[in-house]
Length: 220
Image (cartoon, rainbow, N blue to C red):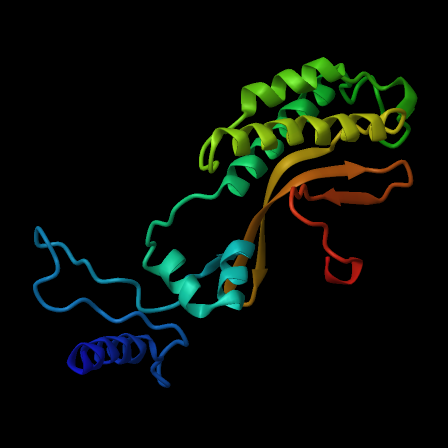
């Protein structure tokens, strides 16, 4: 038993030592592969420096745990999916398709974005929103059929509340799923904005859909 424990400890120590950074190189240097690991005469070595582009997901992973960042975004080790991802993607797709129809029904030539009368905007009926939801549904990674059905019902309830709250205050989005690249020194922060509205006041409102717990105002 002691011998087995010692072998396990040595393996852990070796892994930790491999993860340590070189003071003269980048903070997250990935070791090069050993001789003979490459196949077909092609180099199989991993990147030995930080990428030039980052997303919020990557930065959040590194903040949570540098190892998590390395495994997910450098080594790209596959992980099991989560039902929360399936549900979140379903809701995002549903609202994207719904608001594209709002755009189609209220073209800029007919409705000035800065003078829109929100009460007269054309909006698809609620039944259409539910149909979009059903067509966009992703049923992967749920623990069981009852668990799946619970979230399926929850999604409909969320959309019903969303539709009721926006009656009389609908807006025509100026942009949907808008990609952006923000240059910060030699690096680039990239991402996608769910929705951008131009308000009657002339201000811009950025909307980011979330299906999890709402953040506190000071942490947004």
